[in-house]
Length: 317
Image 1 (cartoon, one colour):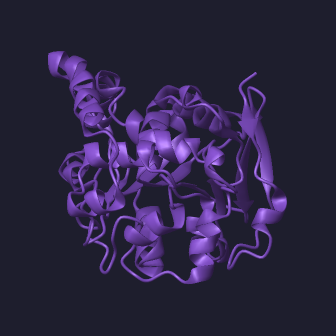
Image 2: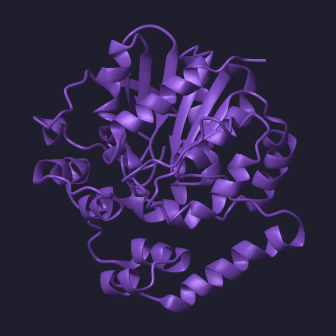
């Protein structure tokens, strides 16, 4: 049994705009929290790192009002879900496996998927595992990192080597040079990882103190933050497997797929062109999200929901 921590329920009392009933599902003795609201066609919302289902608090009521069943899980290590105490318990494959099992055990089908950040790294892999269960995908500020051949074999070693050379990275150093190695080193070495501050830094609009506090709520102290600290280092761990999946699945994915990145997004922008090349991508609907940065869900909810409406209207082949 893996060592886990469970955030006390009182940490989530009276969070602004987050008045949803909790639901729980177990995987190998680990409890995962998810929201399940409304009835109708299913929309699955997958969050990234280091956010949690709180980032969809403004999406859910509006989607329910439109007649949808909306499901928003907290990844293990985040939100109201259990949290590992050891970084070794987090692997890319582990996150893909339990989300795949979650979709299967809940009996979900004809799913419209919205993915952002790690929601895409995991969600696209889940789609590849269960292609018949997913009908539509909207990708925002995300991608599937891949590299085949010899480069894909040696790249993880070279990246780890570069990160190790950096040692400790301060917030000032990260701000001065925001790149992937600095981000991984910062998350793993900074004494106090300020989750709310990270979400604010990746948002175009200014969050309220109550919203920032809500992003910090899942983490009473640093021992609870193993997930947010370690996920950045997992990005490059399955490059060759992702390359195989990309070539086998997404180069031939013809179901409705739209790509909407924040107009101020910089972190995942390299993946935008790759997503636009997916055969099912509808280029009449793709459009940058105005006044939106990396955590676009915090910046322009109505625009994103309008694009989701466009996606739902696209016909399946």
